[in-house]
Image (cartoon, rainbow, N blue to C red):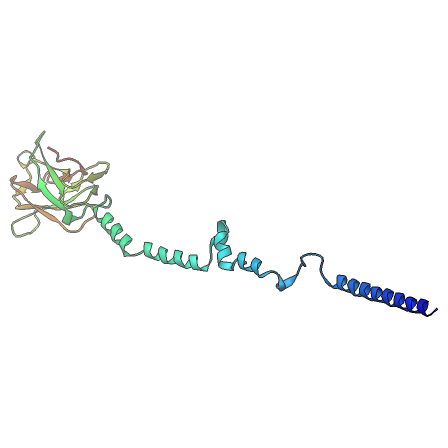
Length: 241
């Protein structure tokens, strides 16, 4: 009986130890993860953050094609470049071009006046009044010249020549080129007009005020009386020779 009692207690103690061990093992299995644990939020793996950093706003803009690439820094650079492009260099070129390019009427200071040879006919005296472009630019003449005979003292001799009928055209003169207008009057010996011998002819280019002085060596001109008027025609290209 005693032996049986001890054996029963020993068996009970062994069973209890096994139960306690099973309980401890079960508790341990509940607390340990079965695989890699996923962690959310800022507690994510440090290696992922260092390897793939989030792009800043500037780098994201530069990497985006199209208009999103424009940021405040490139805009400032564009503005600076535009300012350089509109500097004084462009103005200088434009000014130089306007001085040497075609366009605009010929001014008195850019012209030289001369008288061509007389081409008489039917009781008329016909002289070409020639203006030559002596400047370095191309300019234009349009219409009639002004003219007046003067004596050696500069006083006017006879009335101003009148304008003959004609259709004015624009004559373009490159440097060195000429245009001419006809000066015509009746031969005083034929008309019987009163005469005087001028020393020079003053010529005023169209739309100008300053005059050019040309020596007159063709003798008497009518100043009063019958058929005493002289006439001027419009400018034409050439010298009238």
